[in-house]
Image 1 (cartoon, each protein chain N blue to C red):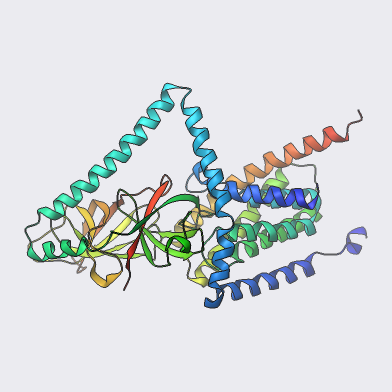
Image 2: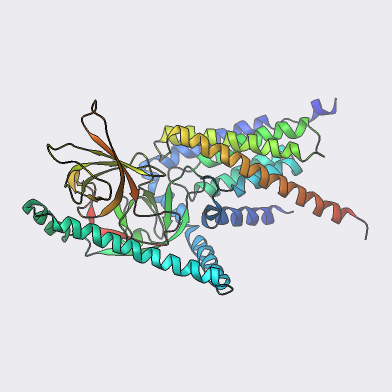
Length: 271
Length: 163
């Protein structure tokens, strides 16, 4: 009897649902983008403080043992390795005796003069949000659509920007598409994003076959990304006779779970 | 606990969730501290309190996620409403009940979020992987809520003891 007289929370639930749906519809409007960006940037300074505190704590705890020192050394070597891999990939691309490629590499030097370094202060709040939050925004000249890179290569693109923070959609987004070419065979194709590995659909060329160990580098085709950014390393190639294209699995050069600093290219906007 | 204290706690949990929690990844899933707090709140303080704090916590998560404000709050609201039903109809003494309720809330939260992200065209892993992540998150959150409810009960019992 007592249970029946207790007020059910259904009315409150429905009211809150309606209010949130209304909020979602309003905040999605283009004219609300500024206010939304401002609201989203509000937490960024606190996230930065917490991230810095976490870094300091791990530095302190790393002083207490050899294993921690080895981990730090390992991280440094991994970063160095990623940088060397990028250099190898770029050298392989340069090694291609191809006039068109040389001209394109000249084009490559036309961007990247204006970059903003930003600290990664947060990540998506759930396993589905494949995003990073950085501590720079429109006040630093960052706009939605700008390309984000790390020392190792392509990270993604700015999707939303507030005054002092921005959200970066990474290549782990399965909807992301990047035009790329392979460093040794010069075969071109499209890289599709994915959370665990990237997939590249390679356009065939008679007498040329893609191979494991080649680097995928942005080709600049389509104007979505500038030419010359390292995307990933080919780990396996699949060719089906029934299909017109080959498919390659790529290991992404960046691990978003350990990225701490990225650079936003300000002088290139997707066409 | 006053509203201000709970608000502060929610803010801290939301910040920890987007900064430190992703480093505690297991099988692609990481703990959803806000969801755990909302389930505990609903379990210990009733469905209405759960709904209100689901809304507050969800909006804090929306501030750190891409896209419009609302999807996380809506997803948490559905989870809290389901836990509210649970609370009214089962024994509060058992620790298995909050664990099952947390797993259910986590599953509903993931489903609503997948539907919302898909509708809004936001980044989403392939459906198979998304459901794997959702299942891993259910287990993770169930364990987190069980430990939290047991701890909160122990603290409550100690306070109730006469000096």
